Image (cartoon, rainbow, N blue to C red; front, side, top):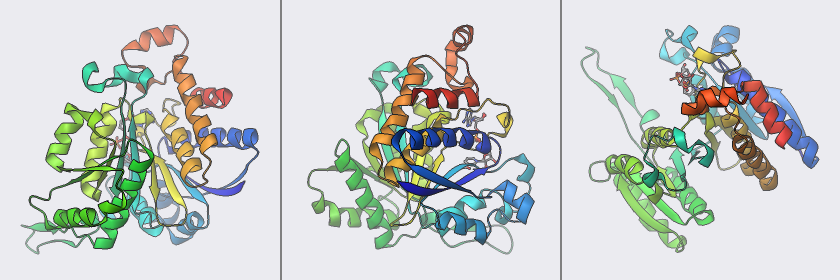
Length: 361
Ligand SMILES: NC(=O)c1ccc[n+]([C@@H]2O[C@H](COP(=O)([O-])OP(=O)(O)OC[C@H]3O[C@@H](n4cnc5c(N)ncnc54)[C@H](O)[C@@H]3O)[C@@H](O)[C@H]2O)c1
């Protein structure tokens, strides 16, 4: 297979972790007989420095012309005092909107090797967690009408959803549930919000198309409690932009390390956008300390969802598991074992971790 992958290294640790994911993608190409060409895209703080804006049309066009996009992270203190329209994070909204990727898939998977890093008790976590959050990404309150009154004494943001926007997300939730444990939970605030009541109406209308999936609803406040009280009840969660943003961060914390979690953003057609869930971690940028596994696992998702290469995706995930089984850790996932890991010579940096995955492949 021949494909073009757009790479957005971005800022901070973004370039460090994307470089390791590329090594892994190259190894996959060599092992399975594929050919990838790469196009590097400038977006985020580095784009502000180069072009005066977080994302320019020509760079977005490179993404649109590719078969899939792999992003590191954007942002950092250097650009923190800019007006909100000019901040690096605006590049993310520009990419998501420009690529029309309306669904964000955030798997919250707890690796059994990293169980110690999970803040929940053993009896709550059992033999592991595997939750998939399907978050609506390009509508709702983050994109609705907003304003601040002239006297600065009131401000508003508007949550607005159309039937079509809800239907495509909930259908995606049902379809992923069909391929997993066949349970879908729609999270909303239908006891108060009209927009949430529409989410329920749409879900009730289409649920008959998925008779094999057990459907449930939870209000967001209850869902947030359930996520720490009994997270194993969840298989797939479908929810709005803001609720998904908050709930997926909560889910990521109970799995242990932010440096391990990947994500995919998909649209109806066109390239998907793949990225680790962490930010640009300016505190450790360029120090060979970042954990590259979330980005490497994002590359696995890219192969699975954009190129349909399940065997290759699984090979990357298995290689990551092997490296963890052998006891190798970056600082963020060494936890309380840090001294022992170090003494065993298995406390590794970004580059060594990437290389270990390549070798296990
Ligand atoms: N998608 C994105 O590009 C994205 C997402 C979140 C935050 N940001 C931006 O990133 C910058 C820093 O944000 P933040 O500090 O809130 O979040 P962050 O995720 O960058 O860092 C939070 C903490 O986790 C650690 N960490 C993160 N990723 C790691 C990794 N791969 N390996 C080891 N440790 C890791 C960091 O060192 C830090 O201590 C800000 O400018 C923020 O706006 C970007």
